[in-house]
Image (cartoon, rainbow, N blue to C red):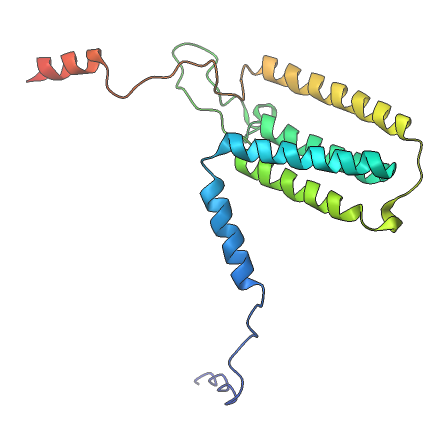
Length: 193
């Protein structure tokens, strides 16, 4: 037996309604794509946005819970940025531990661009929250600052100990870089002729 064919759409029904935000989403995506190679400028922009947020919170003398939540979220993103994609404790070491082992590059759990974009969105969301008085919960802010610094130092100590134990460095500055064409390769190519 043949399965029945789906009913044809009504003459006025052309499927789901068009998304009115689609042109704006495309423009934002184009700007994000163009900003990808400009790492330094993106981070300077984020620092300026954070400074603007800090000035707003300072002059309002409030929104400490929003600021605390923002700081915890960015700390969580930083941990993902510093962590390898594959956890060596669970799946075995992926980085070479001896000179004769195969080299495997460090791959982050959270890529740099996603770290930047998630941080920027969070700061913009926090900035927007400062316009709504319902988010201004009265708290004793020195306790939050103290607790955040304790959390930061404990978390970073654990992360640094993990980096030392499994011998990986999540940054590329200071590492050797090799050019594709060197004099040794030319000499080897000539000797093969």
